Image (cartoon, rainbow, N blue to C red; front, side):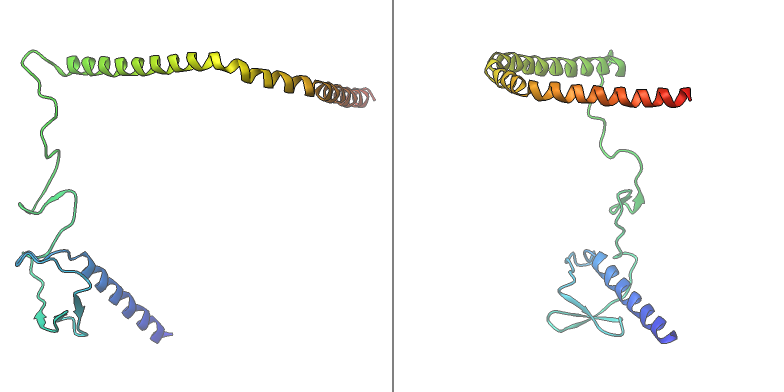
Length: 172
């Protein structure tokens, strides 16, 4: 039991080491991009063997370690908060945010109304063509009217029977 736990721990450690190596994207000192296919680790993890067979010493250096985050600037090595770029709308001296918001709102509403007008014109044009299709519906309804009436009478009779039995059971 203990042996299998040790084996599991070792396999977990090896998987984590592979993940760490996959996360290492580029070497800052020489600017070369390292990939998993070009590097193989030796068993002692102190040296790396590249595809040419040369051994290179692997030392963890804080200058070459990479932090991959959206809130971290690699150049300044500081946390980044807020927006990187300035706002897209520049305000002049007499404009306020409210004025700009109302202008944007008007533009959006005009765009929506133009699109709605186009759609309504299209629907009006296609409505005149629907007269031919409606005759098919009328024919279908006429063909099925006999069966629909039959089904309606049977449904009404069944409802009446249910109500009669409930009424008789409530009296007695």
